[in-house]
Image (tube, rainbow, N blue to C red):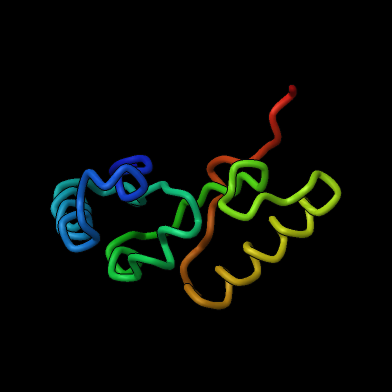
Length: 102
């Protein structure tokens, strides 16, 4: 994983991140990805072609438009389906999900 939520924190631009990912891919044999909240993959589509697969974070409780617990599972499934269609044939890994305990 080349970075975790760096776009969320505005530490790099999408173009800078894609370049870093390509540099790492040129030096390793393992599949390479980047991990971020799902919206940032949509906001920075230039990153997706650089990775071997996408790692997305789906945290319905913490989103800008929070989902209630009763809608959380459907929300995760809907986002996963959207990503499967938009970024095919790349695999999608859910790197973070869940609900706070209190």
